[in-house]
Image (cartoon, rainbow, N blue to C red; front, side, top):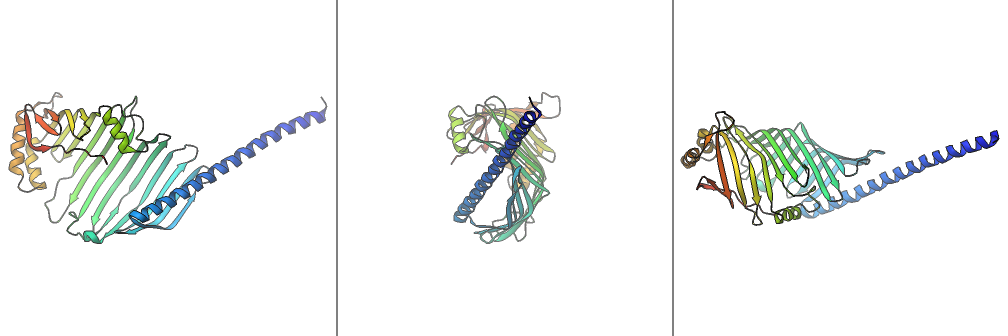
Length: 345
């Protein structure tokens, strides 16, 4: 083979490689442009739908960027003007094009709401408000969110705004497949506080929940209510991995197994571990004046059915049976306590 032939073949190989790279770049640019257009159409539809139901949605500064690896959407100084007027300092969303279906969302405070119909205005601020969403061909599969140092204050409390300030140190939630055919719903709120000058100060409290919907499937889908109904038709088996409540010296944690019936009522069994149960009437009185005697009577009945916790601590433990929302301690229904039915639209 002559030198000219070898050179010609070498350049031919390089030409093919360069052509492929150019083609890939062009295809990626087309992919980004198509995603950009889809996002613009989607945003326009959301704005139009919002205008028909909630009010006019505008952004002082809005745009889409992120080329070439992502779509970065932002809306600064957004305003929703309708029956109420809400203004948000900023909102942004990032969709990674190399990870289709994954979206990261961030909200920047403050949020101000003028609510003439409620007779007052409220304002919210936070140090962190972020979340992620994963969507596949079967619809929403995963979602998570974190809210840090959140405070909601009523600037001019009206008769329909029964608080001066609501705050939470940190709140989180996660939704996602739990392996097999199960799906997990989990969330927590730490140091949640309600303050009102018209009511006695309540103790800060924390809540935590982790629930496993057995045989639910790996995604919520495009129709969450329909997915829940389908799960109920398969038995509605719900494993309570943990339900916990703490308020000052009072705490309770429950585990167990429940089923959700088509009529929305829960049935099943819970094992509840409690500390400071004897202080519950005082807390109830602070929440609802005049309820101390009734709650004390219920607590007395519950204590009669408790036993020392199996972990050797000072906690008391009780087995609760639930039948269509009615809670039983032993053979006796707890008076005045009913779990309301869960309704699906």
